[in-house]
Image (cartoon, rainbow, N blue to C red; front, top):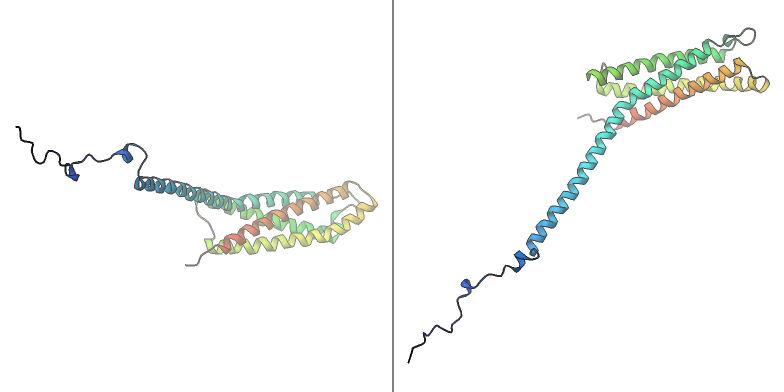
Amino acid sequence: MAMVPADAGAKPPPDLEKPDHSTQNGAPNSAAAAVAGGGGGGRGSGGGVVDSVVARWRREDMLDKSPLALHAAAAAFAFVALVLVASNQHGGWMEFDRYQEYRYLLAITALAFAYSLAQALRHALRMRRGVDPVPAASGRLLDFASDQVVAYLLMSALSAATPITNRMRSAVINRFTDTTAAAISMAFFAFVALALSAMVSGYKLSKQTYM
């Protein structure tokens, strides 16, 4: 009679059993899912950071270019106002130099034109060559203060010239009064451009660090 080995019915040791790869061949296990989830979240947050950085760069680029555009616009509007006032001479009472309000408007528009043109040239040189004739810290303070002063003077000239022009236009409308009204409108647009430039300069000044 054949002898049956004693260990024939014994189970194989646990370390020899076939490992279960169902979690590897099928759905990923919890650790892999956590890694995958973490990687996806990292990519999402990284995209948000990149978007915020790009938006910040665009905002800073716009703020860097805006002084040139605003001063150039102010110079153009002030020049048109200056020409309109200076050429408004049609004889008799229709001479601009007979009225101190219009002489004041002429002087202030000339000042605004000269100042805005100088500032536009300065910012164009800075953007083209990367060199500002005025140091950065002093330049921001200069922009903020001088923009406000010239804008205030323009508003003062507008306040002086508008009432007398309204009285004239209530009595008669002709080339003289139309030209004066157009000059006042151009001076007002120059004021708006300088006021916006002052706001941009004030924002830059508030963000300036002294360390």
